[in-house]
Length: 377
Image 1 (cartoon, rainbow, N blue to C red):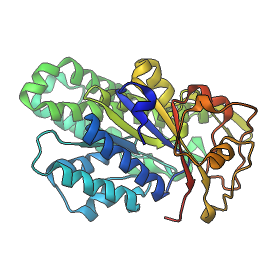
Image 2: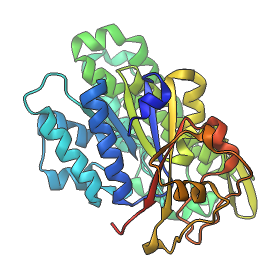
Image 3: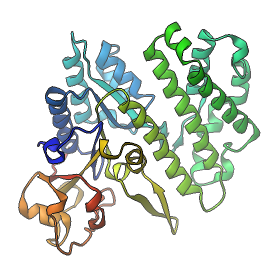
């Protein structure tokens, strides 16, 4: 499966989407692609749709052997994806590859610390960022003391109340304390940038890069909490846009370090504007892929994954007049979308977790990876 031959170039960010989550066949396809990119093309980073802070646990393990594999899988992935065999196989391969090597492969999550139940408390990321800066900078440069920061944060339960998902009045994201924390997070982020030469010399480039990650996450997470408290009809769209903006910022940082493979849902990596019908309204926002593409242009490539059958999800043979139906009849794994012509209809799946490719998206997809049959995980 030579994706780069289809492209004719080696992009800085190669995106492989998946049409559904939780399927090990898709993860193993990703793993095979990453191994080939590492061994044949010099790629050294893979990033997945998982908490960017939790991903540091995995990166420490694959680069330095820190921790136990079971603990790493439990603590290093969000959305409970550490329990998937395909993810464990990836981590084990990366650790084995890195043993005794200088040019190591790296792992990263690029999602925010967000779950379906709601966003995380900003306490861990803000206190870690503050502690890093307090250790290397004069105290009078910091916008507040650690005690003042602790008082403003209060209890984590205020931030993680699951009732806020359905009731914005339950959120503290637009309280005076939260707005003050937004200002503090911004000031801390500015310090990470303006004190770059000193911070790299005093700590290390790796520590400084992690501080930048903490700064991006702190400011992004507090903005997410802000929109959690919004009571207008723009709330859902702004939350969706904020999540993808956080994703895009992390991806752009990663590609500065070298060619990177990103793996996530097709909807996060597509170039088109995303949309979702929820609560009787249609919400639109720009995906992470669209945002990154605006910055990288030809240095961003997007390969969407499609599938034929998934019998354990009651997804049967696709109709012949859909993209998936045409690919099912051709029985090819890698397809140039430009070869798909004629009148194609969107596929309707009986399982809400599977998102079929839309014919109108074909012009902006660089390639399609097709799995004819996906077996139970």
